[in-house]
Image (cartoon, rainbow, N blue to C red; front, side, top):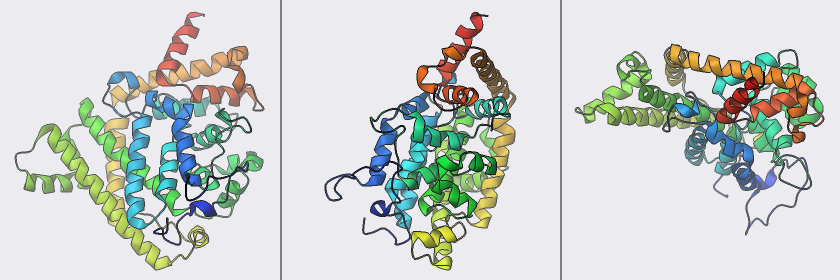
Length: 376
């Protein structure tokens, strides 16, 4: 790993794990971040992402993205950028694969519904839930709960948290809380994984939206990012249309976003000249789009919110899903004995219910709703 920049996260200089473990020999084994990645890949929560909604519910079509395929795309984009910036690809990949482990069934509608159910019990934040999964909820090892990931991976997973929850969970979060309270930046790898997430979902949501018939390519022409890339593609391939045109324009958008991110981040790094990861933490964010491209991304996201995420068909389906989440929460409040035993731990009843529901896949949540509703 000698090709890594001095300000990147170095695996064998990690701040370590909550529960100390012997690491594998550096010359013959995996480094700590590679072990983190592998632990995420093999955990149950990662497998369940295959049946969790991204935008379109899992049963609406086999070709639509799920939380699993989304996470894989984030990891691919993240690694590609990390390589060009001489950052730690293994850490970027570990964070990218783990960042959605705490997401509820039924996408953002499920998350909003569960947050509403938990409004009097400190709320529900999916980033914090992802950390709960890797710190406590996975049960794979004899000596500790969770996956016992490295500090840097955990830091990247917890990219946002409310001030209220920092205080509530201060003892658990420890040094992670210190970073937020001291207004320090995470590693460049964590910053990169966050933007790779944005690049991935914006572009695959365009693809899925057009595939579903809810978006028309012509309507996307009102956004600068799509329209400018479309003109370039048609200059080279004047007869291109349909799905080949869609894929080629999206490919060009991803390329321009990655190129801009790399070039602008290099400028920011040169400007602030960090010499170590400690310098990174004290600097402003250094992984970022240029202002002009950022404005185009914001415009595209605004278009998708209005025309896809708030499309009546999506809203109707996700509203039904949200009602199912609320029903399940209220049911388990009255019948807590039906919560699986491994969720009856130190957390209060409402939090245990949130843990249980958040871990459900779309199809399991739906089948439980049907089964429990029939009991009256």
